[in-house]
Length: 126
Image (cartoon, rainbow, N blue to C red):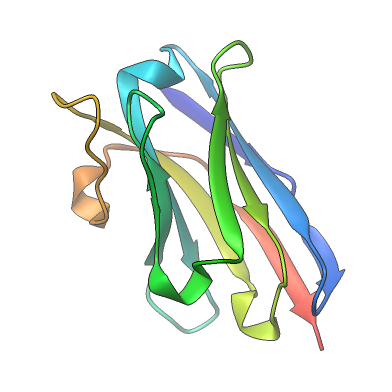
């Protein structure tokens, strides 16, 4: 599985940005896709994930109500829509894939994800 994250950029606080994670090698419906981020000087943290079936999504509390995850099976792409962005959302955002025996489960831990994209930088100015 190869993942390509894109869509990062510079946005003002309160604005929106949409990230894409394009997969190749396998269908996105065959694995859990997660989004993580790493701010300067901080550890990488879980942002959200979508299940194999696509029927379940889960986002971290600190982005709940602002970020949503979706998927387009035809384009083999997973999206992270980010609204009401804050300066503290500034980070490199990564997408990752994890095999799962369950079609409805999502993973929040980094070690569950075996495949990682290269990251895309999101900068939110105040």
